[in-house]
Length: 398
Image (cartoon, rainbow, N blue to C red; front, side):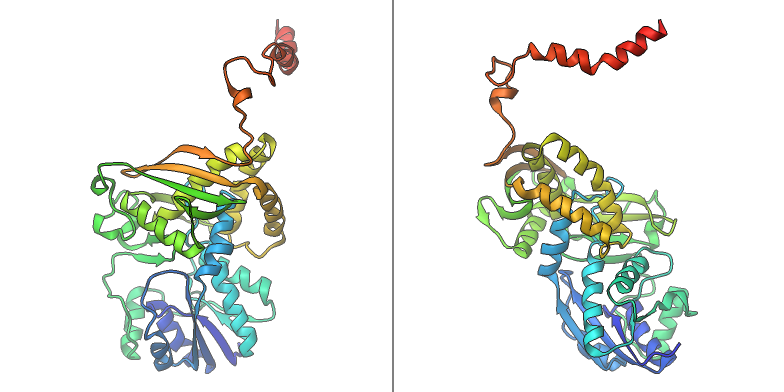
């Protein structure tokens, strides 16, 4: 395979540091490093210098945080997308925004190939390559983990030592970590035993429920057409909102999940996640829909939420299916405006109130007292018609 210029999704970590050098040695090509800031709170200073020293001709560091929150995280919140009813898709949802920018740089720089550092066993290889194939099908895709002989961490460290490549981790790192403004994931290493309880010092974003405050914290989250727009009555920008909610929720032990999930490639994988702000937003948003969506739209949307979650998990962000689902989701959000009040207490996030200027909740109808809009006698005929098929079947059995 002949490659002249490749854009590498580069983090400066163990894998991509070695991949950069490996690409130069293997293909004799020009390598452009691309690092995406999606709110991982890691120090990006010095990354360009490191990439250039390792063999890159250029290094682009792009701040994608606001785009990530506004157009990816918030859209998944609107969709109520939760994979297998527990995973809030923190890693999955970040891949398309990174891949899109990587493709833009490749087309701008005249590259003929794209490269990622995802392993051959995980989901990220699918997510990156699905985006690449959709956005720039003419470009060659290089996936080193599927073609090189460096198939273990020890071999990677040996390669780094041989080529004098500085790496930020040690041989005995107990697990792998991926972070962005939505979450932190922990996988591999000691966590591969699904019965092993993670050490408390592993967690970064959240306190344990035992160490959370002994008094509950109340917080109000505002939504405008399904989009989170404020905290406690104050308008708040997307990135600032996520940061504030991460702090508030994290301090109260909100957002930890320990699951075994089904990867697209057929492997069961244990993952431990911290998603404090995302947990609160999902709970609040779905609750606001309960008073602003009609019954049929709400039930259909609930059924499609699993489809949307799988779509994100499986790397199908840039597809016609996703565009079609977005059209429905965005239409349902036209009246999802209002405020949800939450009570946070030692790992629990409890909805205690909701209100909306366009609520469908009508006290006159819902009340057990006499109502002008609803006559309880009308239920007699309704129940007889609704239950008629069951009654006919029961009579037949007799």
